[in-house]
Image (cartoon, rainbow, N blue to C red; front, side):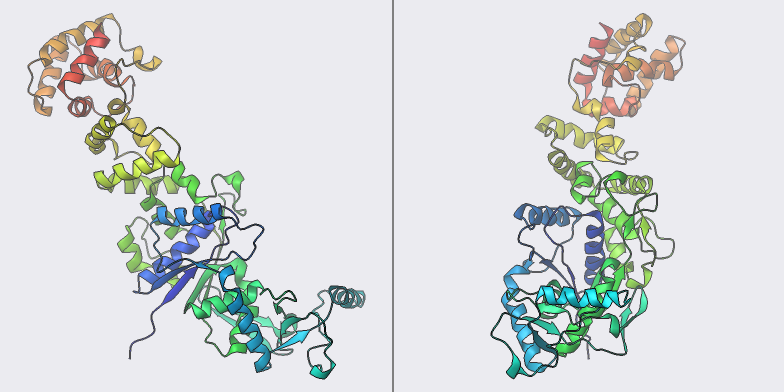
Amino acid sequence: MSSAPIVTRFAPSPTGYLHIGGARTALFNWLFARGRGGKFLLRIEDTDRERSTPEATAAILQGLTWLGLDWDGEAVSQFDRRDRHAEVAHEMLARGTAYKCFSSAEEIAAFRAAREAEGASYAVFQSPWRDADPATYPDAPYAIRMKAPRSGETVIRDSVQGNVTVRNDQLDDMIVLRSDHTPTYMLAVVVDDHDMGVTHVIRGDDHLNNAARQQMVYDAMGWDVPVWAHIPLIHGPDGKKLSKRHGATAVGDYQAQGYPAAGMRNYLTRLGWAKGDAELFDTDEALAMFGLDGIGRSPARLDFKKLESTCGWHIARSEDAALLHEINAYLAAAQRPALTPGQKDLLHKALYCVKDRAKTFPELLEKAHFALTSRPIVPEPAAAAALDTVSRGILKELTLRLQNANWTKAELESILNEVATAHGIGFGKLASPLRAALAGRSATPSVYDMMLVIGQDETIARLQDAAA
């Protein structure tokens, strides 16, 4: 008999951008489900109508799409399911696991104030309507409250945190349906997870306190409780809660700064999860390795140097066509000018010699400057210093030698070495003015690679410009 398929979900609130912590939560859910042939679902928790915006929803979807996290079916709107949530609240009434509460806000505040005056550190409201005779109900608005257990303990069996025990006398009879007939978050989440068939709830450990109260809803309805997995939050390099002072916190910012999606996935997977010595891996390897048992209990620290190193590894091993496609998307996200068709062609030709040491796309494009720029080349001051009278004379001579050359690396090496020898200089002395002439930079890829990429006519034209 086969076991039920695994179903996970990511349930962000569309009140702002997709936070890097949320992105990692989505990634863990995606890896866990996809790696086991299961489903990964998306639910937009848009019940806060004042703060939820279509723009935030679009940013969340775009961020997930950039990271390569696809979801099954349409994204579910929690707000659109409010009638279903109310239906479950009334079903709990019928089951006797919930009750109508007519207490006013003032009465609840007075109860808590009296308990605090008695020295109670935390006053759990005990509604006088919990066991009231329905015949005594007034004709007035009411909330529906859960009947929380008054004694004993509730145990959350968490795959990351271990067993977490909560004393039931610390749990109040929480409201599941307000007096205006709107459902509370605690009810809506459970109903949605049950109806969507979610088997594993993988989320931030800031939700751990909610699990005991949500488990009451499962028990009240006689539903199977999902596997809980509460993952630690992400901290900044200083060990404090991640905030904008540490750098980018929105996923979209990382795309706009030029980090490749594959590198970001790899880095976020390792942020708080480990499998042996595995540090650098592709998506297929991550899907095969990832499991809840590898998630640590301590907060992970964001390390930008490790992120860049990881991204550099992925850039170096990316297929050129895919890399070019992602660079174009980066330029759009960063609101930088798009490449012209000619620049795209030359960049594609240049990728083999510039991608090995680039950690981000801006760094890669800087290394490919020689292929993306156009004449006249204006050298930077450090490069211009190499173009003295003697060097310009050598470049003038070199252009004559290159007129009829076969444009291969072997022949270019032969010609350049012959010219250097004839002038009694090492190749390094010749390379500096060549770099200035071809790229306007003192740090560039190999002069042979640059000449092969831009071609014979353009090489000669740039050398003639510099010699003049």
